[in-house]
Image (cartoon, rainbow, N blue to C red):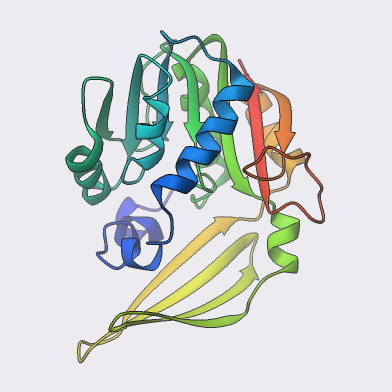
Length: 247
């Protein structure tokens, strides 16, 4: 396995430009999705849940309105600090953690992984370690929710080149598929500063491959949805692949 310093996300997620590029993700979007999920899942009010790869905590905060305790985990120290500043309280807390590493055992009633926050690693072994860590963290009968992109839809709709301007910052973006990854190359131009180069490499994974991976970790696929309104999944037309697993 490559060292974390060589993994794309260790630099990009701690960059001050990451939240600038994705500033359109807001609390209203998170609230709508969480409301739909919690109506479907019907978790008891005394549940303890985790938001794995929680980013700046907007989903964890929304979850805390429904359950007794939420713990948000993320490997980015910068994102965890921001989450703590914005949302930490009696019912929600945040910690730096790599999902491949062991965590609480038989502790959570549900674990959530939102907005394509899986599939980042270089090897199958790393992804299996992450799946097993998530499974081990669940109580028997506990639920895992994975919110991923629908790989077929994303590849069909792929925009090869795009420029996004946020204030004085210019993002030049290239997208392509390579070696089982959907790749986004990002060049950041901020005034007279030298251009900065970042990359996102997310696994091109079908629902069938997800099912096999998580079965090896002791989880069974219970249902799938195709968008944040929890519509039925359509392989060609659904933008999201939202999977509900049970231990």
